[in-house]
Image 1 (cartoon, helix red, strand yellow):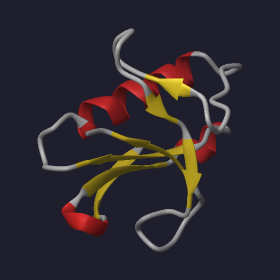
Image 2 (image 1 turned 180 degrees about the vertical axis):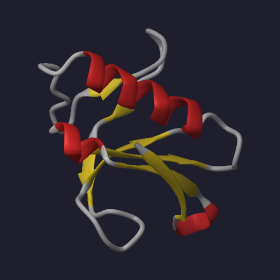
Image 3 (image 1 turned 180 degrees about the horizontal axis):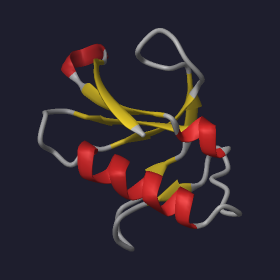
Image 4 (image 1 turned 60 degrees about the vertical axis):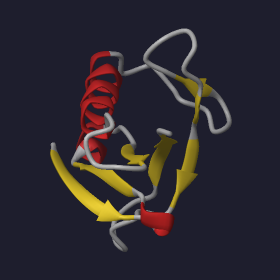
Length: 93
């Protein structure tokens, strides 16, 4: 799996996975307001979780988080790099 960073609107950035589709899983796009706010760690954690649990699904509209208090809404959006498959988008504050 590879990772790429992409610019997002309103000064945000995203980290995007590449290669999850080879394993039959969706790609992730994790956005954050400033580099270093956790998108890289979250992308790696989510990718690892999805690969370790091949039956796990993330329905659009559900929420996930790194704690019981964190609620990140699962979205499916076009790939922010401009090419490639749609991504499962999670927006960090």
